Length: 69
Image (cartoon, rainbow, N blue to C red):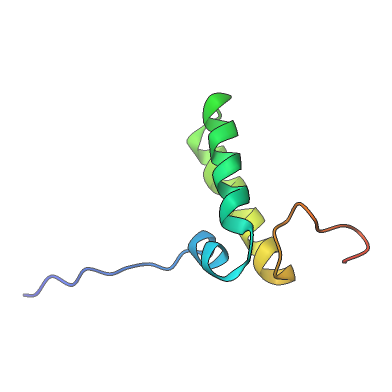
């Protein structure tokens, strides 16, 4: 029986690689959430949601406005 190590390409990693500026925004959020002692589930779920938005609009979520929608 062979052991195959799978690498999963999460939506957050896709956004980091494919959306310019998302990796920096992600890092800043993680730092802020860590300082504020936010729960791990909040960080994971919030970042996943932001990644979906970033991939959809192909830009980091902070410049997305109602005009973009």
